[in-house]
Length: 159
Image (tube, rainbow, N blue to C red; front, side, top):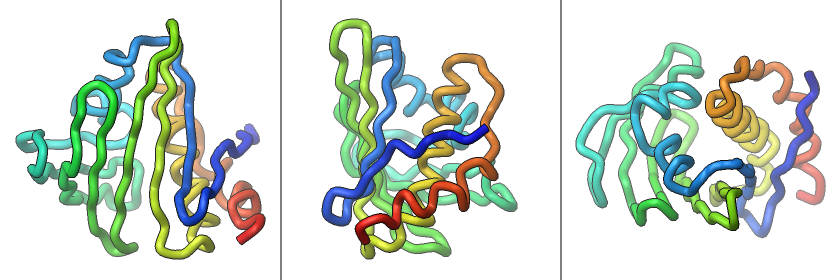
């Protein structure tokens, strides 16, 4: 399989979108309910709420590490902003959902401290968002090896 990268940089913002034939409420559940996030990204525990910190287990990363994730904004079912720190740096992730008719667009945005990081970060988020698509459609999970390093050049163009 050779998935095509869909994301781009706008300034230092990494932006990737996915479309779902589902309601905004259904897609919102896929990105906020622990039993659903566990299918594509990682399960989490704790008391969700604005300003709260939850613990997220990154089940597809080496060693399946746990990470503290702070909920910076939560405007159900339209917008979620979280921040976290790990061995690779500080992460701020914004997910925005927009429904038009029977289609919901998920817009992922991550500001990068350096545009050149997109070559490493972009393929990883493409992989995770395709994992979300596969989980929602009941399809087999993609392989990370199909994303990295194959998509790195796409994200380094113009940096």
